[in-house]
Length: 111
Image 1 (cartoon, rainbow, N blue to C red):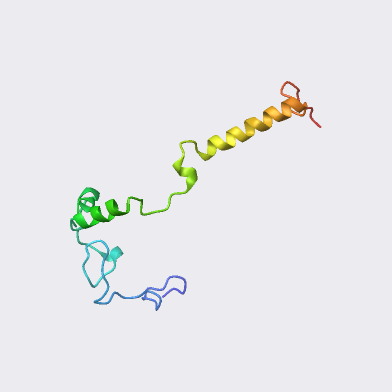
Image 2: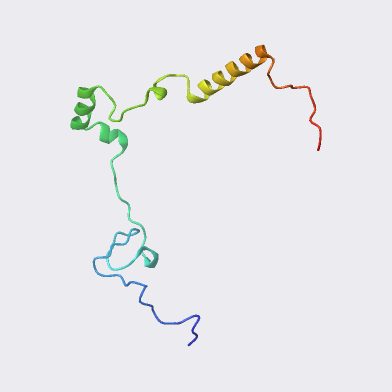
């Protein structure tokens, strides 16, 4: 037996117990990477079906507000990028009126 590639199961490799549930087939007694079964179809309600439940609809209609607090910057049509561009444009206009603006036509010299 080689010391670099032992052929026995180490202590750090756990064995599946009867309580171990496979995430693929939802069976017990083995891990997902050991699974040889096919994935079963699990029926779940769609988002529309969830919203059509009377208790969920009543809860949404009674409060009249979203379940999550929305920041003010997301409520307006103009976004963060527009505000940044407006601020930069204002800086350009201020610097061009003061004569400190970047010189566009001037070439840089190599050092």
